[in-house]
Structure formats: structure tokens, C-alpha cells
Amino acid sequence: MARRLPSTWESRLGTEFGHPASSAAAVTALALASFVAVRRLAGTPLAADDPAASVPLEPSAISGIVLCFLLGYMIFGNGILALARDREIARVGAAELRTPEIARAALRRSRFWGALGAAFGLITVLTIPGTYGVSLEDAHADYAWFLVAGPLFLWLLARAGYLSLRSDETLGAIRAREIDLLDLEPVRLFGRLGVQSALVWLVGTSIAAPMLLGLGLNAQILPVMIATIGVAVLSIARSVHGLGARIREKKRSELERIDGALRAARAEALEGGGTPGRLADLLAYRSFLESIRESALGTSTLLRLAAYLLIPLGSWFASALVERFVNTVLG
Image 1 (cartoon, helix red, strand yellow):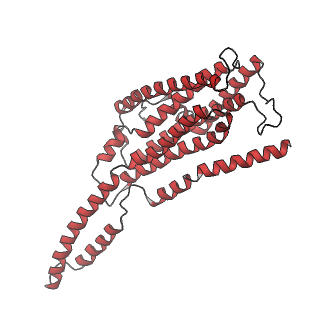
Image 2 (cartoon, one colour):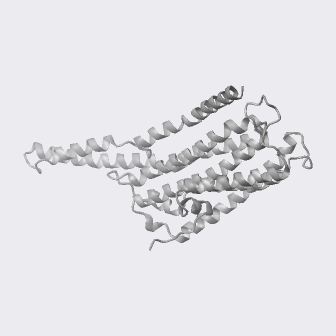
């Protein structure tokens, strides 16, 4: 029977209740239903008063809808990363290293950062009425919804950010293994995990930024956007930190050893002795060693990363096309 390890509830939603995408869709639908219900009960319209607006929705309605999708996206992203981590750990035969104690310790530490994120989210939402020059008494009745959804989103975001940047002891034990130049999978997995984590953060930022930065909330949104981009960059940098130097040192040591063996084999061959074919085998092995890339990022991972870096540019281009389409349709 498979061992059940402690995990965040958003990870369990993403992995134990079907595919992360189905859980994310359910969370997004529930969030949208609650948001629309609150606005209808309060009699607050969704449509914008200005018919010439590029998007025919109230700014607060746009913010709420985007936040609903981001809540679902955090469930999706967390579930995808949990699946990727478990798959990579099993791929290198280290599943037995992930004990309940290790999983529980990582979960405990993430709660602190989640609390900080929720506090920042609450402060951020509280500053929004002042940005529009509106008092709390005159704010939309759906403001209470944002007071709940905003901290919840930043709570999820901060916990996911911590778990992306701080690997638990299981990955630490894999990292501490002696490097085998004939099998670099235990090293390459860190590059793959870092790039997958960066993808989740870049996609989320690319989806939200074009829609939110035009609402006059730059003071609240920009710090979050900068933080998410920072997490994306750091998740790659931290995941591969020091591994390239270890590969390089191991390769140098092995080349020195092989060069010594080659000199001995050459001397034996010149004297008419030695094992037949040994010199050729050593030369072939030395050529193999020289071909090893001194990086924790494999070629396929680097190509994937290059493609991911085009995501923000593509999202801005797509948002411009959507806005142009909406303006054309609405005349």
C-alpha cells in the first residue's frame, strides 16, 4: 500500500481529487460563483458605465474575475509541481528517502510564509479604496469578498513560493550524493524541477499582468508581479546552484585519473605488452568524459527554458490582439 505523506491542502486538491486541472477548474468556478453572487446580492453591476471602455466591465469586476482564475491557477500550479517533484524523486530511485517527518517539516515551515503572505494580501486589499479616492464606507459591497479572496490568494502564493525555493531534505539527500558521470540523472532533475517551477510562475504572471496593470492598481499589483518573476528566476538559480562546479570538479578528477592510466597503457603498448584494446578503450572513455556538459541543465531543459522566456512576450501580444478584437466587435 502506498505511503500517504503530509502535504499542503492545495497539493492534495491537485493530486488526490483527479488531475490538477480539474481541481483548478472546480476552485475557479466556485470562486466565480461566489463573486457574482455577492455582486448581485449587493446590486452592484458587472458592466462598465463607460460604453467606450476597452473591456465592458467595471474595474472591480475585472479584478475579481482575474483573482478567481488566479486562485484556481495556484491550485493547478501547486498540484503540477507536486506531481513533478514526486515523479523526479521516483525517477532516480529515491522515493524511500521522502519520509513523513521530512514532509511534515516542510509543511510546518511553509505555514509561516503563508501567514506573511496573507497579512500582505490583507494590507494590499485595504489600500485599494484609497487608490481610487474612495472611503471604506463608500466602497462597493463586494469589497468584503476581496478582503477574503485577496489574503487567501497571497497565502497560497507565499506558500507555493517558499516550497519552490526551499527544497526539503529528500532533495537535499539526492543533491548530497556523490556525482556519477555515467549517470547524471540525479543532477539533471534539479534543473528540470527549477525550470518547471519557473514555468508555473511565468505563466501566472503573464496571464494576470496585462489584465491588472491597466486598472490603476499598479502600486498594489507591481510588487506582487516583481516578486513572482523573482521567484521564477530564483527557483532555477537555487535548484542548480553549485551543481555545475561539482560536475566540473568530478570531471577534472576523472580526466586526471584517465590520463594517468593512458600514459601507463601507452608505455606498456610501446614495450609490446599490455591488454589488447585497453588503450583504445581508455581513449574512447576520455573522449566521452570531454563531451559531458558541465551544467545541471540538460540540452532539452535549456531549450524548454528558452521557449518559456517567450511566454511573457506572447501574452502581451495576445492581450493586445484581444483588446483590438473587443474594440472592433463592440464598435
